[in-house]
Amino acid sequence: MRGYKIFAGSSSREFAMEVCKHLDVPLSKAEIKRFSDGEISVQISESVRGRDVFIIQSTGSPSNDNLMELLIMTDALRRSSASSITAVVPYFGYARQDRKAAPRVPITARLVADMYETAGIDRVVTMDLHAGQIQGFFDIPVDNLYGAIAFQDYIRSKNLPNPMIASPDIGGVARARYFAKNLGMEMVIVDKRREKANESEVMNIIGDVEGKDVIMIDDMVDTAGTMVKAAAALKANGATSVMACATHAVLSGNAYENLSRGDLDELITTDTLVSRPDNCIKVLSVAPLFAEVIRRVYHNESVNSLFSQ
Image (cartoon, rainbow, N blue to C red; front, top):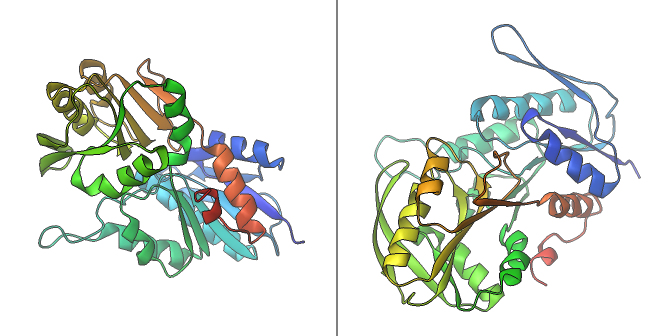
């Protein structure tokens, strides 16, 4: 076999090292520098000719730098005669603008998808895209992994007396329904009206949460405003406790302050993004899952079977 190599961008180096540890392969070397004006310089430090290459890089904050770093690394590897290039992007940045929700706005997720393909990426592996239809913006294979698989064992270990799944908004119903089905739980929906980006107003709860231990499911937590207000609404409607599972801990702005002052009892997230330690945040590693997916992609084995067992 040709063999494969794994490279890491600046945003996901520790995560990539964990992936490599599970695969028992070394992390390949690349030199990433900045020119004095901030431009990114990349040099691949070992031969990749004829090899299948995986680049692990989340494109969270600083999104522009991390995205450009991924694209520049891709170009360097393509020009170094790599056989194939798979972008392993645990957190896919610029996914929130996935449609024309208002006049004269961009569809940024489609623009970024075009940039990936233009740079020479052959396949994308990511987790919990903000909207599933983003897969259709690509003309290359996209494996969108379910973050729910990382939370299920933890939820079961809590032994909650009256657990119930909640979607924090209408847009997340499909994600919450998948989770509820796998765990055999009922589901409710928090209906909210968003006046502008990063601000939300909870309107009402669709379903009965009286005496329930509610578990909210979302793809990301940014300023935590939505989750904190949803938790308050759920408790106001009789919920005994409220915890949240969010795959991507963006945690920008005053997120930590919102979490510390809000009604949310616990936030469970993953290491797709780096977050600072906090008493109310539990971080679960998805590096073993990504390692197994990389192994399966390389050996042309089914990825979907991981989530259908």
